[in-house]
Image (cartoon, rainbow, N blue to C red; front, side):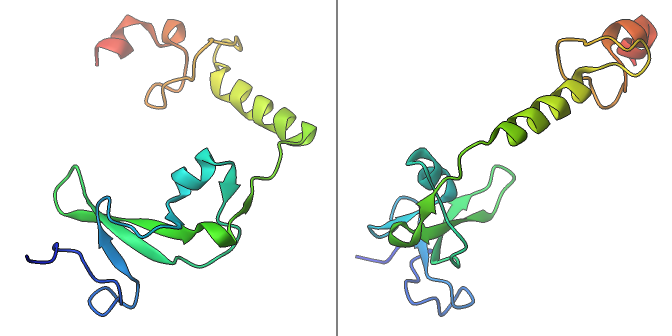
Length: 124
């Protein structure tokens, strides 16, 4: 039986980083998203390995792996962080032309709400 294409657990072919094919990471290694789903974060640890996955644009891309044993809990959201996030999101929804909250994030290519942009800008 042949080995999968990206099987390199000692990292000789991929710059010293242990590399595994899709869905073949060893136990105890997780991606950032998997850690977040468990309420954890990498916590400053170095990348412990990588999984090579297909890119939608062709070729492959790495998904970095971290050790579960070294992960730390996610920092809780403070009232100041919550207020800052709300302020930033409000700024993304406020039209600079009319000053109203559009109720959605303004399209970057228009720079204004759809009402202020008008039908001519929407058709282009």
